[in-house]
Image (cartoon, rainbow, N blue to C red):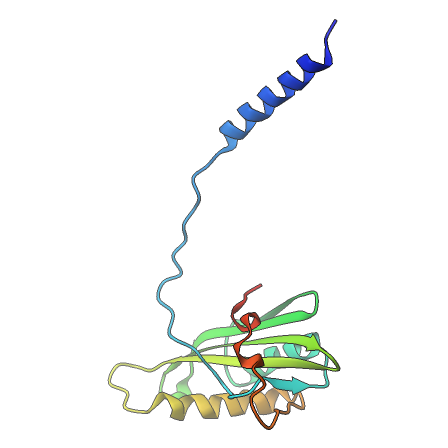
Length: 165
């Protein structure tokens, strides 16, 4: 007759052997060096549109300004959009990468756009001279009816802006 204690001991032994056999070393993936990014606007912007609408509009906007690989995803009330890196010919071949994070808060979507620009070697154009027009062009193309508070709210420092899906 098999006792319960024998079954428990056998189950523990089986689980121990199985976990040892399945143990693998963690895989380390190098993402390479990414250019530093900066936010497009000093404030966290607001839109009356839902986060998924803001994301879809920025995805289309990135494509409209010539960015490649524009995609968006969401989890609960937060959406992320990403495009690039893309060398834009109208900017002298500088490479752009941009992302937007958007989440629902109160009665509006709060969102922030970031951009990273890598200029060609020997390019004397200030990166700000590239970033500001790019941010303006994508904001106009997205047309999310964005607005900004008059003064900083502290929301600019939230960890949500650095999270990825």
